[in-house]
Length: 416
Image: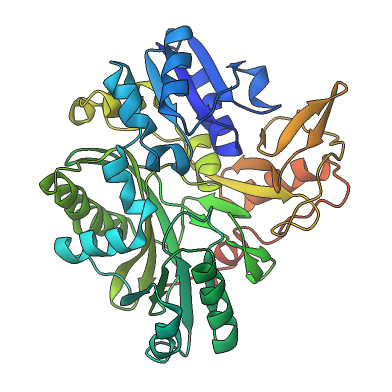
């Protein structure tokens, strides 16, 4: 099987690494890729949001399977174009990708499916903003209704800050979604979904805020770990049965059946799991940790999903132990990052590239989240030690990372 992976981040690097371990994968292509993926896949430039461009490239490299990593091309309908060209594609249709592309659509689907989620209200008129804000609090959750690369959310007890974020979203022509605050630790559960067939991967936990102790602004994700020692197996089963399967069935009912990776972000409160958000693709940085423990061939799993044969896929097998991903970010991230700095140590084992490029035979930073460093071990503590030891060998001027990824779980400070 010849596989083309669309995207340029650490998520795509992790996908390519896992695919390279699958004996059934005979050729790997990345478009556009980055400085790290260039070592394991043939790279090609592409306009990832153009179905025509992706199809042309897939035909040129004779791909048997196209795997679309980021959400933007999925929401734009690139998977539809690939399938229309007769090429197997891992990734949902534009119709199904609305589960991430429109939070209002996702809320409607969840209501119809009977899935617990936060109370919400859409505001599309600045004149109605203050009145709507008064109906929420004392914790305000303010979201951009469209795609915002994980950074369109503000959670605050400061009404003025909530209002300013909402006003900025409206100023840019996007509706605002106000939500009630969901308490409890958060869980990311990835599921392979083929219509109504659902196969869960390992649960993970992301760390969204930029600073230790969950301080500072939200980011695209500063680190993740898996599995979750504080999450009972029966809770994962309940999430699959009571959340993911009903949503998958509702999408089928609407004629928008999902094919690809459905990502459920949940808060596990006193009343059980409640959905914070759905995404239509592998999450970053959770993917880097989850795939580090996958023993089953990834290509076979993605191809089964893409070709409608997921129900006959053998049960997924996982390595014992734990995995931790720590993101090394550029100076000033999540603001406008400083780029062009030379990186030392970026070719080590477990170092996945995101915002990197090659300049004058050196690897330099080219984005906000520059590298994802993955550690593994017999338990979460050992995996953390492995990840941070690898980070010590990497030098990036002005680079920063959180020192507490997975620490609260190690210290037993998370419970449900």
